[in-house]
Image (tube, rainbow, N blue to C red):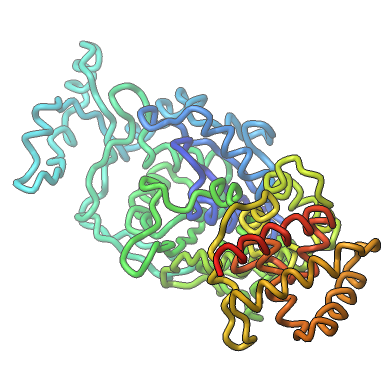
Length: 482
């Protein structure tokens, strides 16, 4: 009988949500949803030294923003809790002692000085199994005497541990390469190597999805499952996400923080879409997909064996595709906070600005920079008026700016069509090409070499009074510098 698929995402509250960590959670979510299963959130907070205040709240916030909804967790009891490791302390001690009874673990009384003496010249530590075969009477005596101890895994000797990974196939590790590692520390806290096995079993996890750094560690976890007589889960190990050809993305060095990308103006759905493609490719090679489409398309066969390089330029492009696909109303709502930052309380038409921006930005964070001209300018680089192909120099620009100012000063209908018609007719009367006037007018209105629209659009956005004031200022600036 097939079991219901149960996957888990088990972040440690040790800082921000790294892109690689979020991808693991995303794949676990997609796999569960694809297989009509259950997706569980578990907080692994036993690393007290590295725990960061507010990090648990950040996990909830990130999952909500990313659209990854869990079925069970600290806030959604599904009958397998607690879902926070520090609330499960008694469970680990109970199972560690049970594992000793079953012969899969043993008490170790070696003190810190002895363990330090076991390091080789390179500082590498390998435990020599000194306490592995203490007789039960001595163990009981030392425990009753209150001696500090840890509980270590009793790795079977002379065996080969094998398992089948859904991505990498058969993995084999000699037991001689596996140390009798600590399962329960002297302070009663479990190590990750023990807690994750106990939790995964008790929570009924059927598929464990995590990074390739655990490929070679999984055999020792399987030995714990076997010693208890528990059914092993199925494993799916994911290749790393790289910063470049040689360096992994690292949470420790502040690489690829999900919330930082949100703060830059990326859309959550675009980030999630992009990271889904870091190590997985749907059969039809689609790139832009909704969460529902990714769920439908997700297939373990599409997961790569090779690492992926995080390319922000590609994610930026994908984000731009999402922005362009929005309705005008959706884009307006998404862009409004950024437009407000740009206009700084000034009375510009926000809807007009949003319309201007939608096809001209790849991330929302570009909006304030592209609209910076709205806040005015002082003297600017007049070399911007030099355009050999259009045969424009400062003197031609001066004539064009004066012409535009004169033509527009009496215009009452300040609309795109009217402004354009007025400028074109003024150019004809002045014996100039309309392109020369439009080019010079755009620079005069914005003081910028690159603008989010042409001269007519800039004039509409600025309004008549501001446009005429800027044309007059630019004409005076050109006159002084000829």
